[in-house]
Length: 464
Ligand code: FAD
Image (cartoon, rainbow, N blue to C red; front, side, top):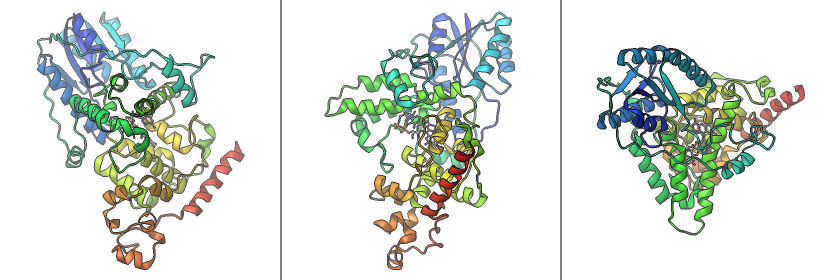
């Protein structure tokens, strides 16, 4: 059988059921389709992984095709040109992509081409973990407990015997812009880099994950999201490696559990978006779509540039800009600041993250913003308004993270670092900071902004 294996956010050879099955069934070629031009950090990151998987397949004697036509046209054209008998791929759990897949399957099957699609990108397929009433879970903790009881599918081994079709690979040359090359100083693309990152996390950080995961200054979380977002590693491989990690140590089991719980948030997002396909555009709790936003352009720009006058918010936004990543704790703080302190529509923040995050993931991003906004089904309540000052004091007590990304505040210490706008003249002078010149005055007053946000929330509550 001559099989085309389509890749899309699954740029790996390990735990790639479509690839493994195709290698068993005969000769293969890989293929990837990119219709739109590359713009976001994630686009370029994904393309770097296309190059990586192409190289890995070529090394095994398997050709790789790159196309830019609409999916159905491109795949049928390849099938005609290379006389394919079958097309295999791992499925998406996004409804618009599922429709596209269904359409592709219909066209291919009408031409007598065998199509197979596989599950690979989640621990449990959406729709398999349901409540006693057979409904989707709306709240994470019971979902997590139920998922924990499931017998999870084992990862599929990397194929050993490849038989490539005798066709030419496409040339792939990407003109990576300088801003993207800078991000590669922080993250190395590729499946091998992903597996190495997993190993380092197991050895260096898993044993204190629960205690340190909220501290943005150190690399104490796995940072595997950048690889999961392009499928350079699968969640099943991560799950299996964590569970099998047998380095005994005090409390290791609870550390493993804390990590697996976070990993399972990803599955939760996937099943939520599977069920609520509009959740990237609409609030899951409808009343939030009636929210009266300010959407002030200057505020939005200053938030993006990390110039809000709140050191932790600014450090987070600058970490994102400089590295293409932001620590989870800080994502919550900056997102809350945008939607609650500045009253900016959460979809504006969601889009900015989409443009800038290497690990942009449609499900996790939508759920993350809806969680912070309070508009998701299992979300932080709206009245929980993160205080950017106390969050900094608690989670960056030495100010190490702030000083790294907001160098103009490096000479400040103690409370002055976390709230320069309340520091005395002497403290600021000693730290070499002139407010309004070296560092911005705060965009809003925390207390006043908090009250304003709560009043707006009251309006939608009363109207509903
Ligand atoms: P670790 O702590 O090592 O966790 C391991 C893995 O578990 C992560 O890689 C991720 O796949 C999963 N995970 C952990 N926390 C969450 C969570 N809260 N929700 C869903 N999955 C989680 N994550 C993305 O992958 N892409 C996004 O576009 C994204 N946008 C977000 C937007 C907002 C506003 C917020 C608050 C969170 C967002 N997250 C997103 C979730 C979370 O911030 C990242 O997954 C995490 O910071 C990645 O770092 P890590 O791999 O070191 O995480």
